[in-house]
Length: 243
Ligand SMILES: [Fe+2]
Ligand SMILES: [Fe+2]
Image (cartoon, rainbow, N blue to C red):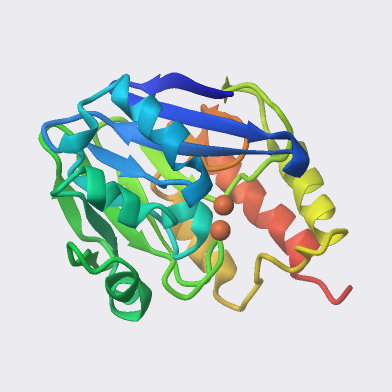
C-alpha cells in the first residue's frame, strides 16, 4: 500500500513498504509553482507513485525530478515521468548529468548543479550539497530546502521495517540495526567509508536541518545536526573499522 504524509508545508512523503525486502521506499513531492519530486522510485513503483502524485498535483505539470545518486530507487522511472510530464527535468549533480543521467534519459537533458548552488521552484529555495560517495556513489549529492529546513537525505538515516512515517525520537539504533542487517545480507558493503566520509557528513550536519527525510524508514524531525553526527559515528563503527 502506498501512503501519503505531509511532513512539512507542501512537502509530502509518498511511501510504499515492500514486505519481501522489509523495506519502505519514499519519494517526496514538494508542491510549488514548479513542483519537484525527490526520488522517483523504481520503475515497478511508477504506477503507485504516479497515482499518489495525482492526488497532490496535476502530474503532467511536474517540473523537476531530484535525486541523490544514479540508482533504480532514486531515479529509475525518470523516463516514465518524462513521458507523462513534458517538462519533467532531472536536477542532479553535474557528475550525475555528465556520467549517467543524460545518456539514460535523453528527452530533457538534466540541470546539472554544483556544490553550494541554489535554485528556486517558486516559494521553495533549494541548496545543493555535493557529497561524493556519501551515502554512496561518486555522483552523490543532497538537496536542502532552505524554506522548510527539510534535508532530503537519500540513504542517510536508512532504517529497515514498516515504521511510522514521522518520528521525533532518535532513530540511531534502528539505523545501526539496518546497517548490520545489510552487512549480513547479499547487499553487504553498500556504504563506503573513506578518509573524506566524516568531513562530508559534518558538512551535511552543519546545515542543521529540522527534518531529515530519508528514503527508507521514518522521517526524523528535531535536531537534525545531532542525528547526522550520530549517523556518522555509527557508519564509522560498522563500515569504518578493520572488521
Ligand atoms: Fe542508494
Ligand atoms: Fe535507497
